[in-house]
Image (cartoon, rainbow, N blue to C red; front, side, top):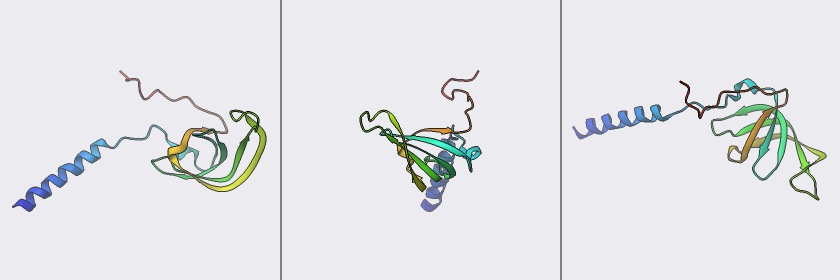
Amino acid sequence: MAAAGDKAKGQTGGDQKEKKRKESILDLSKYLEKSIRVKFAGGREASGILKGYDPLLNLVLDNTTEYLRDPDDPYKLADDTRPLGLVVCRGTSVVLICPLDGMESIQNPFISQE
């Protein structure tokens, strides 16, 4: 009888996990196989073709180019670039994702829609 009670608790725990899941406010599926530019924590920037991603914003970019910084001013980008090829970008360091072919405005997800 204790096993049945444990089983019931396990089922309600699973239901609560399903309720806590939220949709990502960023839909990257429409940018698959398109060029994007990514800014990282620490100031690095790169652009490439988005090949894949996951819910943690880990990104797979192909034909990636890194934009090098100016040696005199680390906050300014130089005109120099270097090719990186196929890259996996860790989602915790991604600060900004921008499509190279233009942007679109989205609704602010933090303002209540009434």
